[in-house]
Amino acid sequence: MAGLVKTWLAGESQLLRWLAFEDYARKVFANNHPAWHSEPMRYAAGLADANKVLGSQVVTFDFGAVFATHAGLAADSEGVERITALLNDAALSAFCADAVAAMAHQLSAGVDVVLQLPSPSALLVMLGEDIDNIDFDLLDDAVTVLADLLREFAQLPVAGLVLAFSDNGVDPGDEGEACEVLQGLAAHYDWVFALRLESDDPTKAHYELAADIRLIPTLEAARLGERENLTGGGLNSAFWSGDAISPISRACLYGDVPADLDPRLIIERVASLA
Image (cartoon, rainbow, N blue to C red; front, top):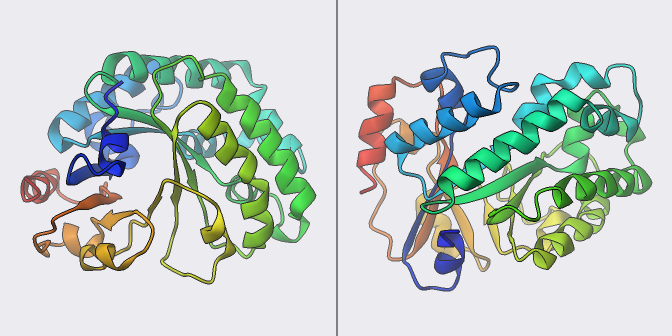
């Protein structure tokens, strides 16, 4: 695998370009095709084609986006069974396995392929669980199921795992503690372990969860150097609206590519990073 994130983390490169572009690829390169999350070759090819334009050094398989499309599978379940209802669906399981395998084999020589999971609470809420029902025991059960899912990809050239947290009112201390299992699993497979956070709020206890890098898509580029922990950000809405990024000696430039922006403007903004 390319090992570009690890190279940057080790200080052996100065800039890392990491774009999240699931929605952009789906709209611009697949015309919102209804089979986007059911035909693995279409999905992998769409991401690969999108990245020829974007030039991201990291390409993500976003379980959260896939699960959201198939959330109806969990409609008749409760608690952790909402998650197992998804993962026990043969068609969905086959899509995930085949899509990740295709991405890893087609792309990993040139970019880092990473897996992104919604945090346990974010996934449970997405699937319809009441926040008041989510306690440590349920989070712990959810992590156990998610860890089993990740083990299925251990033999592929996957570079890392991203946990995407939501500020949804669930106790961040409980969730951070439960997710230590996933942090340990990533370490066992020698994967980079990243947290994707909605805000730069130091009061959130999940900031105490050990991670190689924290990804904050809303963070201004000028603030990247202020943080003690290695952090990615800078490609926020202001950047996509036209704001320039001041010269930075060392940074992970991270953000979401907006699907609703004119594709020509996306090309212009990406070119400004060169």
